[in-house]
Length: 317
Image 1 (spheres, rainbow, N blue to C red):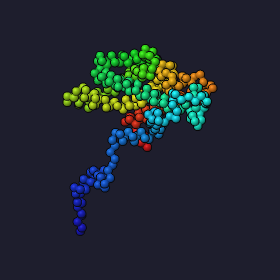
Image 2 (image 1 turned 90 degrees about the horizontal axis):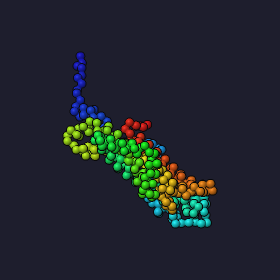
Image 3 (image 1 turned 30 degrees about the vertical axis):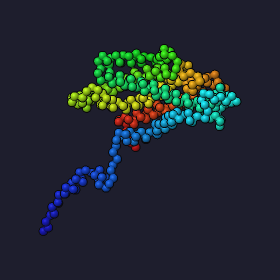
Image 4 (image 1 turned 135 degrees about the horizontal axis):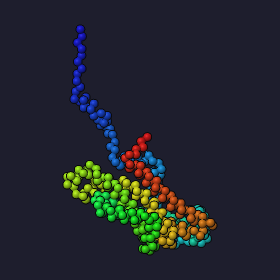
């Protein structure tokens, strides 16, 4: 008669190995699983969006070209005149052709990128800083401060952006500096309303209540807890707003209220090209393409950032 074998209990090492799972085996074998930081997670989702990646590459190349434009342009954008080739189309000597005054269009577009991008970025940056501060205070404290900020925002929203910018420039005068101020003015209420809405939701979260219960000051709660949680929304809207600001600044220059000739700004170039659109369509074509492609790239980039930063959207294949 055989005695049934009694299973021996696993030793401590076997139990530990079974409890920790594959991660421990990977560590024991010398390979560690990659840690998914927020940046890694964002980049993992963003790089799968090929359209947004193409837009990012275009924007980066455009910014680099604008920064180094003085070293890249083949001719002086304002003081070079080729009187033998007035209104000539694209050629080896002049890639985008020549305008009615004999100036190289490629050089003027490249130099104009500096002005248009600077106007777009600076105006949105000013509007973002002021609007974010107002939105944080209005959403956190509410009460009379919230009512004042929102009523002023409602008044500004009652006017179309371009009409409001026209009014500001008409008061301050025609210049690119005043265009930046005008575009910043109608950017403020948009950022204020966006951040206020996020703040109203975040201030009800449990971790905010916990920070308040341990004696954290309002300044600490706003700057260390609420503001970082709104950054993703601000970044997405900032990117899209840059495109809107570029086309608004170009529109003001086209109307003669922004950059003045001979400044190579895209909207001002379109204004100068109106009289020759039939005989020399390339004079208006290339500045128009520059505005169109730049605004499109910023909008597509903003869409990609929104999808990558939204935790509800995960496009894993």
